Amino acid sequence: MGHVITDRCVGCGVCLAMCPVGAVSGDKNGPHAVNRQLCIDCGTCGRVCTKGAVEDGAGRGVARVKPSLWERPVIDMGACYACENCVAACPVGALAMADEALDLTLNYAVLAEAKRCVSCNWCVTACQFDAISMEGTA
Image (cartoon, rainbow, N blue to C red; front, side, top):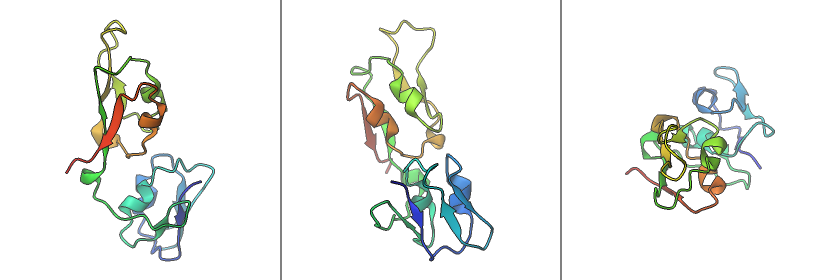
């Protein structure tokens, strides 16, 4: 359904800079807005907002969370079938296969770019084998 930036926005631009798909627009020191057609519902805008100005699609406020504490995907190598669905689903390119040269029976997905991950949960949804869970880093 997408996130919404409320009138509490002060136009700091952090959400604009952090949105992985460019769904946030606005001018510095002016109100920002989320283009709901572009929004992937990851919540990054809300987790970085210092003013609590972002609500989810249900109208609930999104709490600020330091990026270092965001949940990250944890992949169970034994349950991974190397189908690459999670890699394809990741909107920020944070996942990759362990080694493209490996036979599929030996390969598995890995969180290759942890700093890119926006905790959107798309990899979990895309995994048909329940090989991915999201866990906090704290």
